[in-house]
Length: 148
Ligand SMILES: [Ca+2]
Image (cartoon, rainbow, N blue to C red):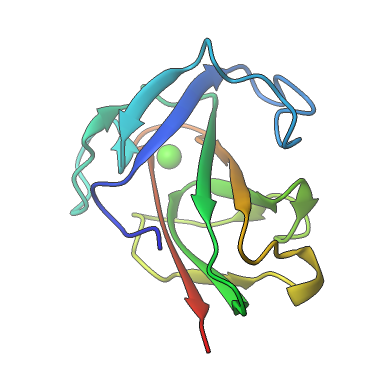
């Protein structure tokens, strides 16, 4: 569906809490840049970023993908330095910004979307607010789903 290291996102670096409402499926991201995950500044942790994210700010990501008919149990696994908030089709599935200390590691959090939020057989939107609070920055994601 969406894999670590190599998937493409629309992205925008903003001040803390910048662009409220960016997670709406109708939000226009046509002026945003396109970048390959992971995003980070490569200041010394093991995971290596493909796209430069200077850090000490918020990085907003948007990624459209198609879910197959009958899809259920969508999970988003993350690697994050420092905090992350996830939205699927505009719904907050992480329940706010979640903190992570130390170097980012894959699967350090796994968030599950309620099936009622999924749009099987249609275009879905994953939107991410990644926050770096200093030093090393990093974010990358993986999305998995059960299919019939
Ligand atoms: Ca950091």
